[in-house]
Amino acid sequence: MSINKVILTGNLTRDPELRATPSGTSVLSFSIAVNDRRKNPSSGEWEDVANYIDCNLFGTRADALAKYLFKGSKVGVDGKLRWSQWEKEGQKRSKVDVTVDNIELLSPRNTGGSSYQEPTGAVSAPAADKIPAAPEITVYDDDIPF
Image (cartoon, rainbow, N blue to C red; front, side, top):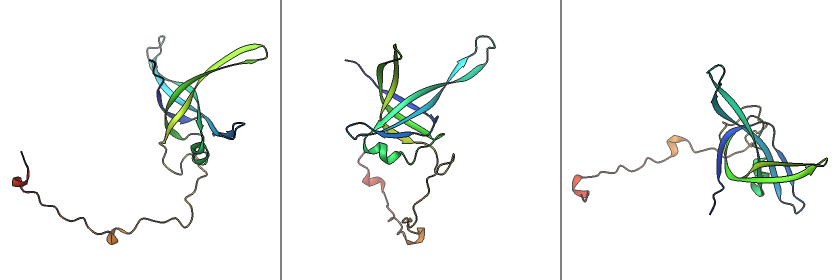
């Protein structure tokens, strides 16, 4: 048995690219920067070193999330590592990327240059004075079975 599971949080390094496979499946491709702390052997100081990870999200979620993600967005992803190999100009190349199973948007809305705007005519939450108060519950020691 083997386990292939990865969980990462980081910031998008570029605006995501939405495309479709020949069969019509949507693919949202993006890259995230994940910082790692390492001690510099020459200076003895701790430094942040960025790792750049390519990610792919497939299906209807790719279409839905394309308008919410942009360069600089902070996201959490979990998925599995996928290795691919190809040949370019006679040289074999390979890379490892993440096939995203779940994604969590961690940036607050309307920051970092997002073009997203709240839809007009959106339904707002009811005013606090119109929400009925919860009934008061009284618990007596005799009601507790232990």
